[in-house]
Every structure is written in structure tokens, then in C-alpha cells.
Length: 390
Ligand SMILES: Cc1ncc(COP(=O)(O)O)c(C=O)c1O
Image (tube, rainbow, N blue to C red; front, side, top):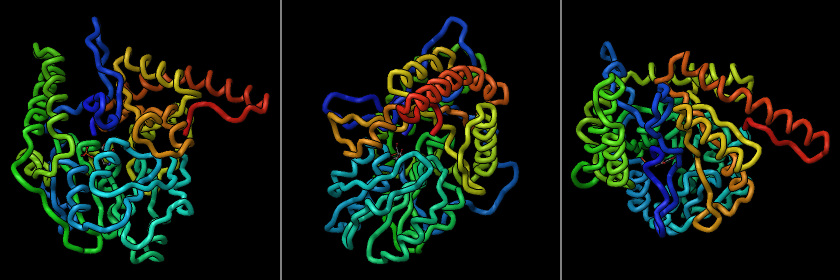
């Protein structure tokens, strides 16, 4: 889900992902992150073989695709959700199946399958968190639990090696996290099972979002467009689109087959690698995978929020994947909630130039340095590790 579009509403579901608000500054720097604009340069130059999975169905949203599948399967058990996951999505899916949680943290250790208590009749939601997992643990688990239905969520790297070699019954990917499209949720069965399709007419929200993307492109080009004009359209569009199980917009359906997905993945991977190299942080990425930006971990929530504000004041709009509010629907996993309070995503995607990546690194480096020295003094005091870097 795109960012600021899902502000918490009183009594409503938790935000899908939250990001500090872009503002209009007197002399605004080039923005990094924030919503995609439409740029025809992301299209292929020559026709290529289809890159979409065989037998897929395209929906307006990933959540709508998951919900439609769960309703079609109508299994009697529970939906097992990773404890570090988008709680807005979990809450939406809880209308289709009761939830259970298993531990999966953003710590490069993958899912803790010993905490997964799934039995036949249940569905397990497995995720490629931040596109940095190879799925090996899941392949083994699927082999040894043939009677449990597994639905993999590949939203963070929909065209990565795990998605391409999945052995799960079902897989889904929300497309507008990584591709400059107004909407799109892909549902397929790596096993070749039948998958349900969307219902109804394309959601109006995608049209509002497309209008926003076009206006933003004009704004970036220096045309006299007010920033709030496209941001309002964008946010209204996201609100209208939320959870839609309708077909995708005509625009997304037409553009998806001719998007230069390999080029977009290579550009965003290059930028994520460049930032981690400049910051001197280590990140595991399976061969051929496109990591979903760069996640950093602050010493605590106050410092994370201060860093978000600092970045935003320099035009870098870093989202938080994903806040966990213990007062509302949450995983019940203290470790996941604690990490959720400290994490942020530096949005170095395919749009960044080398100058943008350097600018992000220059802003972050002093924070990392002070976090590292605080970490080493706490280690000396035996308080335990802190510091930035998941
Ligand atoms: C990991 C993940 N999967 C699925 C979804 C649902 O996608 P959509 O916003 O297209 O409904 C989200 C939304 O935030 C997500 O973060």
C-alpha cells in the first residue's frame, strides 16, 4: 500500500504503511520516495516474452486478491500471519478467516517455523519480507505439510527468484509497491491450480491515482501544478481503492505487459546496494533478488521518528513498514512490535539518481555514526546491542 494514503482513522483499520507527509518547502530539494509519477521511460523498448506468471488473475489490489481467494477456498481453519506484517492487510483478511500469528522478524533469520502451528484446514500466509528471502525454508515446509494451504506474498519482489520458483499452492503480489502503476494485485498458483478472478468494474480510485501520477509528472517537469492538487487526488484514490477486489484499471492492464520490469528491478537494486555500501551496512540479498529499498533500525522509537522528520525536511519521504499499535489489532509478538517501533525504510527506488543516493547517505551517515558509538558504549556497559542496521 502506498504510504501516507492510509492514515489511521478512528475506529478504522491500522495504517497500511505510514510515511511522514511531503510538504511544500520554500526551496524544496528533489524528492526521494513519495508516490510514483508516470514516466513512459519505464516501458520496454522492444517486445519481450511475457513476464507474468502463467494462469494469473489481475485485481485492483493485492488485498482484494487475497480476500477473494480466501473466500473462494472457504477453509474452516485459521489464517496464519507473520508477526511482522502489514496490520491493515491482516485486519482486512480477518473478516475472511480468524487469524493466528507466527514469528517472522526483519532480522534476516526468516520465519521461525517452530512457532507456526498450522494444521490442515488452515491457510499460511508466507511473505518475502523486503525481498530479501530465498524461500528455501518454505519450500521444505511445504514439502512436509502437503495438506496445509500456503499463500505466498511476493509484494516486495514480485518478479524475483523465489516468486519464479515457488512451490506454494497460491501466490499474490501487490504491484504498486514496486512498479509505477496506479493499482494492481497479481494472484497466481505456482502449482497450476485454478484461481478466482476479480469482480465488478475497475475501481474509480485507480483513475484518481492515475490522474495524480500524470499531474505529478508535469509538476516534476516544472509545470505550474500545485503539489496538493496531485496529493489530494492520490490520497482520495488510495482510500477509494483500499482492498478492492475489482479488476485493475485499463491503464494498469495495458501497461503491465510492456513495463521494463527487469530494468526497474536492476535500477532499484543498484540504488539499494549503493546506499548500503555508502553507509557500510551489511544486507543479505539472495542472488538475483531485488531488495525492497533499505531498512534501518534506530535505537528507539523517538530517534526513529526524529530521523523520519529529519529526512522529510530534506525531501526524503521514508515510510515505516509497519507500525504495530498494541492498543489495536497487533501480532502479540513483543519482539515484532519493538522492531516496528524502530524501523524505517529509506526509499531508494528505481527513480533515484546517484546524486540522490549520495544525498541520502550524507544525511544518514552522521546518525549512523552516533548510533554506532551509542551501541558500543552500551555494549561496554553490557546493556545489549542498539544501533542502526537491521
Ligand atoms: C506486504 C504486503 N502485502 C500485501 C499488501 C496489500 O496490497 P494492496 O495495497 O494492493 O491491497 C500490502 C499493502 O500494504 C503489503 O504491504
